[in-house]
Length: 566
Image (tube, rainbow, N blue to C red):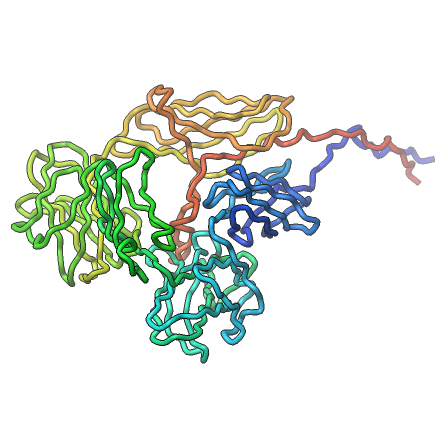
């Protein structure tokens, strides 16, 4: 008889969770009106269904439907107007935030089929705001509307700024399919902006299509369930910009409005009266015009460029700090300003032009009175120049602005801001969400960017931690640029899912804190192809998501069994 032996099994086994944190790639439609209820499709992965929903503001209520990915969403009449961050989450973690916009204006849905100009969806009332999607590869969406003779249509798309993977295009065709207008980019982003004046009354068709973003090797119209867009159509008064381009906060002024279909005096001029309610911007909009435009409010004088000022001998003298609204009048034009600066005093010179939708590809330089170049830049401020500079000695200096491509004209406007470069700081985290298991530790790395010779120590603290978790404040020395906050969970830490915040305090200044941000706007190159998004409807958040994972449940295994060998 052969000796037998046992196959022994462990007395306990750990339950493995097959669920995963939800992912959220896009929301469709991307916008809804206040006081309305709508069906919204969440595009991503959700297992199990339904996940929970977090919103960055009250007034939006999500109710999961039976079909995976579908929610009924209600926006209260007093829901905050504007873009909102939405997350999906479950006990395993949270998605990246995506955008849902609450609008004052009624929102129209795209109605398929509208792929051909002869089957265009009819838009009868303008202004109109259409939520659409390029559903499949090769998709073209068409919208028909009426224009009177000499009436100007303004059409624009929001898609790139919604983090959609599409480089959208707008065009207008007549009822015979003949193209009469076309635009690819608005000058600030990859989203298009188009204006066109009808030479005769009739029906015209606005078409939306696009190419893949980031660009691939194939050149064809793209589409897919994440290729969402908002189409804005207007034929009423619309303002593109104002002069001056900025306002002194505490000084009354009159703004001159420039745009399309501005017929009455009130649509061409608008008074500004200082108000304690004004914060960073003075906003113009309905009923004066059909769109809104935010004018920056500054704490120093807003000046106007005065010609001739294209040489050192004719330089316009200005006193800093100040802001200057100017224009490169003609090809080859250079605008020169004389300023006085003290030795070692830090200054920040910023030109805003391309970022405002103007045609100027500006350069900016600083020279001494003998014409020696001391500093120059053409794109440190994104697509616009930015210089941080300190004078080597007390004296007069020249600030010069020109165009890289030597062009000029009415649309080559700029806003030059000359302000003291006060020491400052900005702190960020690379991820918008973190998790920790009971009885374990995780680290949150904070990156500090010191601006304008900021040298103070910084202390970082986690705020809003649930019971069972702790984290000690971490201080950064004067030259350090990175800190690691330890997140420690006790063995008895209960499951948790929600936002926390990280605050930074310079030199133990308990009342002068700033939040640490997760930035959504990042750009990079992949084999020379641009990727990422340089401008979004929401560009960062200080609501960092924390998930305390459930403790693994141990269950007794089956009883040991024995099987004798034959």
